[in-house]
Length: 183
Image 1 (tube, helix red, strand yellow):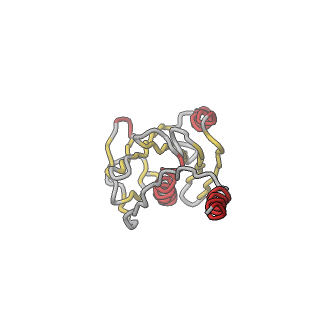
Image 2 (cartoon, helix red, strand yellow; image 1 turned 135 degrees about the horizontal axis):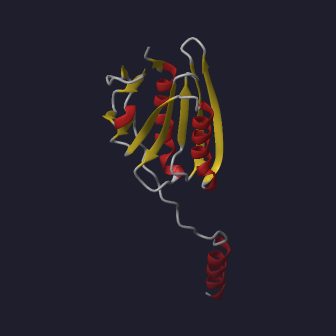
């Protein structure tokens, strides 16, 4: 009996080598609608294609808000005419990007050049728990300057919003690729 008890105790103590840790919280697997786009219907000094699953809100001064109600996010777009102040506008746009450097793990720039349409600009991916994970600006370098920022209506948690950021990034790339200046 003693041998059996000793064997039982030995089995219990030798089998518990790993600590049991709580499992991390799981995030929902989200499905996003297929992409389809239409031309911006509002009169602006510019036009581009916008995703059909968004709501475009008309703002003063040729500004826009492109809302993603299902994702609780928006792209805030500002427009400024260039009046011998392109350098100031570019500096201001970059300051707003690097303002997020405190919370950002990394800031990844991507430049755009379309000489035929006179669209020149940059997209900045800001990784980490920053307030805005995507920012961009485009210009024709003589008359028009457009800046955009992606915001979520929630406290930043980069790991959980990353799929939504990637989904909206495709729409921003489409916006920049299809942007044309009104004549």
